[in-house]
Amino acid sequence: MHVSARQPRVRRRQTTTTLYPIPPPRVAPTGAEGEAGQGSTAAPTLAHMHAGRADAVRLDTRALLEPADRETIRAGVRQLERDRLLPPGVARYGRGLGCLGVALFAILWGVLLLILVGGAGGIIAILIAAGAPAYVPLMIGGWAVFLVAVIAVSRRRRQTGERWWRLERFARANGMTWRYEDPRPQLPGLLFAVGRSHTSTDLVDRPGTHPATFANHSYTTGSTRHPRTHRWGYVAVRLSAPLPHIVLDAKGNDSLFSSTLPVALARSQRVSLEGDFDRHFTLYCPAGYEADARYLFPPDIMARFIDRVALLDVEIVDDWLLLYSRRPLVTLDPATWEWLVSVVDALEGKIGQWDRWRDGRLLPADTAPEPVPPPKGVAAAGTRLRRARRWVPVAALGAILAALTIAQLLMLAA
Image 1 (cartoon, rainbow, N blue to C red):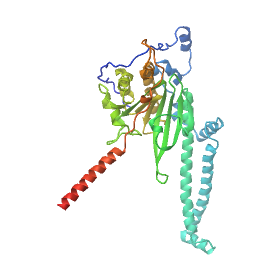
Image 2 (image 1 turned 45 degrees about the vertical axis):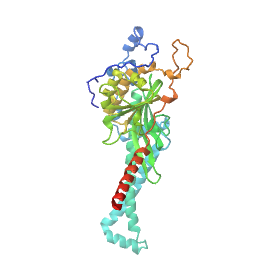
Image 3 (image 1 turned 180 degrees about the vertical axis):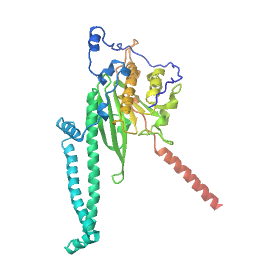
Image 4 (image 1 turned 45 degrees about the horizontal axis):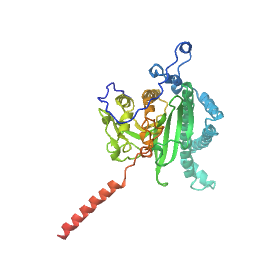
């Protein structure tokens, strides 16, 4: 991803949001503790990136691309099964397909040899003379097609097993953990509120002050006879406290006529920020929370989002920060991983400021005149954005067509 060095021309706007004191951020250890860390010769991992200097640490991406023979990969996949990181029988299913493909190949190879020796017409005549039905040749052709399908599925399954093996080793080498699947991800975002059969795969969990999960996701829409599968990638970062529901619709990934958001939001909830931010994102927030949105996105955070996340849609909901992409994000590409980790690290360096936000609407009306910080949380009015009413454009189109029809009838009557 290209990172622009240009900072947005923004000015700080005064808001009515109340700030409440919070404990100062933790400082990296010094003295004996720091010297002990300097003496270590172990390779840095993602766990060290939370210390603050993410640019000084590189990912260990050797497991993604280093050469490996087939037997090593098979042994690694079997070990994943023994460690219960894969469902039982997943690897054996692929090996069973391979054995079936070998058996079918041997049968069809024997038939092919007979055809080469006696000719196709001679073999068919022999089969018919022996009492075989006339559709036997068609059955042989069907077996050939089935063999090709079995070989293709077996090959794809073998490549998938290698992918699991490489991702698990990559995650372990960088202080993370890999999970095969989560059939019902418990996340509150827009992506998980539409369709059915939601499944997240290849989940890579990263620990830390703000734990993050990288994953691919799919869900289904449409009827049972004509289903449509949607495939996404997402990053979920856990925040320290709930925040108002805010969505940043990235303009860099929109199509010509529509947004890539999984849900259409009411246009009345759009908020304009200063500088160049509106050229890169469309910000949605609940009515009445406009000043809170401007507090949560001061110039330095706006610049960080423009520089790092301009190609991803962003959603803040409850105590989660979610980044969405219309393509898979968990891949075997080292450059993609380095970009994703740099994005999360860049945001983590700023979202700590959001811990200071409190929703004054949670204070009772008869609060004492002394400043009492509200509890963590969001009032009901700010927890969810309103969706767009899809019947409005349909009704407008219907009204236009009705008016045109009436006009045509009046012209004919005249």
